[in-house]
Image 1 (cartoon, helix red, strand yellow):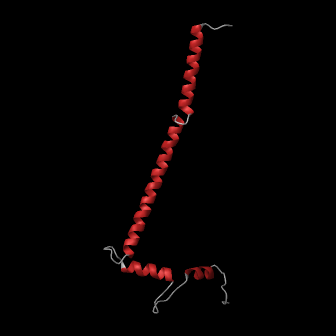
Image 2 (cartoon, one colour; image 1 turned 180 degrees about the vertical axis):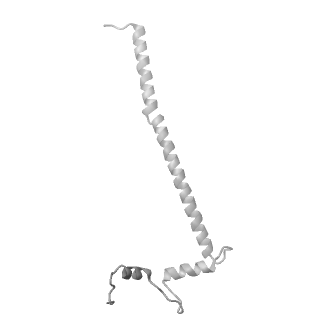
Image 3 (cartoon, helix red, strand yellow; image 1 turned 120 degrees about the vertical axis):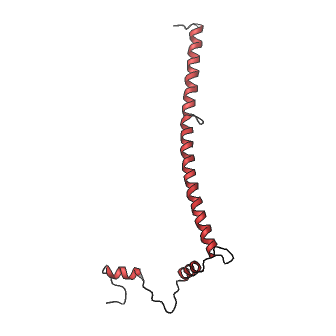
Length: 113
């Protein structure tokens, strides 16, 4: 069966339209890729907001530790130094909560009956 010239042109035009429509939907710059990029953009913006909060918190903590800063906090500096050095004053009583929890659970520590 032979196609007329008009039918061949319509068939070619239809095939071209189908090709362009499928490429516009599923191609590298198609509609599906666009939706995926929008979702990725939203995720990156949320991650950026989380990181901005973390940075602000770290900047605040650093400012409270700098002696030349107006936000300098002597108590916070002492707290951080004691935590890092694992130090206590001579007039303080230290209670190790991890050992107390083990003893309450019935776990015997070394050297204890």
